[in-house]
Structure formats: structure tokens, C-alpha cells
Image 1 (cartoon, rainbow, N blue to C red):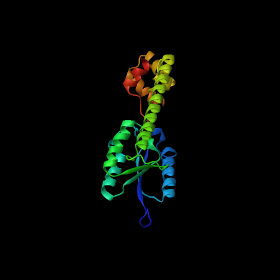
Image 2: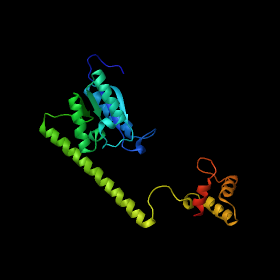
Image 3: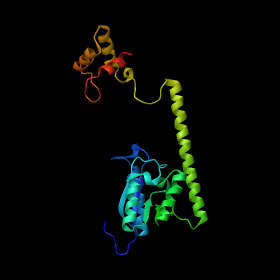
Image 4: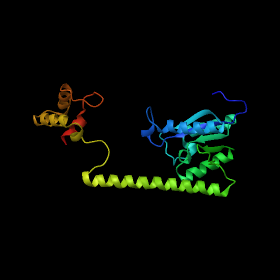
Amino acid sequence: MKTKRNQPQALGYTRTSSAANVGEGKDSEPRQRRAIERFAKSAGIAVVEWFADPAVSGADPIESRPGFAALLNRVTGNGVRVVLVEDATRFARDLMAQELGIGVLVKLGVRVLTATGDDLTEVADPMRVAMRQIAGAFSQLEKARLVAKLKVARERKREITGKCEGRKPYAEAIPETVALAKRLHAEGMSLRAISSALAAAGHLTGHGRPHVASAVAKMLA
């Protein structure tokens, strides 16, 4: 990226916490980049390189994240000392991870700015430090509440249906295949013979392979 002479430089960092927000057509990372780019343009900062951690929890320590670890290597190697993130939760959602990460960056002389201009690494102003910690605590609390709600929903579904998540049993996933397997078994065919007969009739796995004998046994259970 071309930069103007003496123009401040920064590294951009994005993090998505779920694999559902990763990949083509997903909005999380592009949205973060747009917010960072808008702020950088208004502040006269050139984003010279991007780093990303797709599907990485905000509770993970920054040094354990592949993308941020690469960013730290870049920081220590070329003199860029500003990192731009969309907001504090993209840096770290867990309060402990946030404070430990900030401590590491402060020692390296790195500033982390959000797309709204907040300096997450500000340590001179006690009020700003307190507000940052309060925001991190509320973010962590909200995440804990969401996890608790999802757990209650799973348990309620399990009480009603007897199951909640995971692979569907064969009787639900491939009822026609199971029905044929049981009919063949009633005729006295062995598991291997049933596997071959199912394949001949076009009843294959999702990968286009014959159902193995152990799978046939589960169908008959």
C-alpha cells in the first residue's frame, strides 16, 4: 500500500469468534475492515498490513492467537506501533485476556485504537482505564449470560425430545435405507451382504460409499 511521506502507519486486526461468520459472503470480517478503514481515513492513518484470527474466541490470550502472534512479530520487526480494531470486543471479550493483552502491548510500546478512536492501551488516565475495564466486564458478563441461555435452551429441548444436538440417528437421517436394511436382515442376510445390497440399490453414504457392516448393525439396533 502506498503511503504519503511521514503519514502515520498502523496494522489492522480483525477477529471473528464463530466459524459461522467466516468465509465468502459472511459479513463479520468485511464489516470490521470497513469500520477500521473509515477511521483510518478520517485520522490520516495508513493501514499497511492486515492480520486476522477467524473463528477465535475473544477469551483466548492474544499471544495464543495465530493472527495476533503474527501481528506481534510484525510489530517487533518493523517499527509500526499502532494497531487498529473495530472495537474492544474484537481485541478481547474476556476481561482478564483484555488486561493481560494490554499489558503485553504497553510493554512493547504499542497503541491499540478502536474505530471510534478509543485508545485501549491508555494507562495514564485512571478514568479511561476504569471505563475500559468496566466495558470489558460487561462484555464478559453478556457473553456468560448468552452461554447460560443457550445451555438452558439445549436442556429444555433435551427434556422434550430426549436429545439436543449431534448427528441424527439413522432412522431419522435415512429412513428408507434403514427400512430396506431391516427387510434384508429379516430375510436372513448377513451384515456384509446387506451392505452390498444397499449399495447396489443406490443407498450410499454422504461420501458416495457403501455403508460398512458396523453402520448396518446400528441401523438394525
